[in-house]
Image (tube, rainbow, N blue to C red; front, side):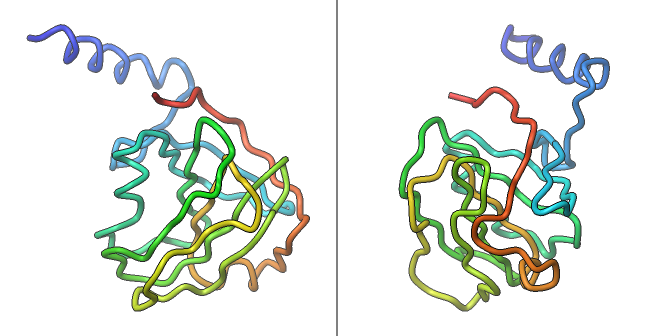
Length: 149
C-alpha cells in the first residue's frame, strides 16, 4: 500500500479517538452556533472541496450546513452550479454575520459575493435565515479545524 494511503487510513482510524466526526462525503463535521441556533456543518477548506460544495446533492436537511473555510479573508464568489435545492448563503467576518443572500434558487444564475472580505461562508437550507431571525451583525461561533492547504 502506498505511503499516502497508509497515512490517510491511519488518520481516519484515529479521528474518532481524537473526537472528530466525518460526514458520509468524507468532510470533517463540526458545530457552529449562529445567534444561538446550532448547526452541524461539513467543513470544506481545499480548493477541490470548495469548488464542489453542495453540487449534485439532493437535499440539505434542517440543522445542517456547509462551512467554506479560506486561508485569508477575501471577496470569494459563489454560484448555484449543479444545485438541486434552494440555500441561504451567510457571509461571516469577525465572528459575526456580515451579509446574507437568502433563498437562492437552483435556477439563479450569476455569482454571489460577500459585502466585505470574509474567511468563512455558510450555506444552509433556503429560508434558514428567515426561520431563525438571522440578521447582519448576529454572532457566530465555531471551533475551526486547521485549514487545508
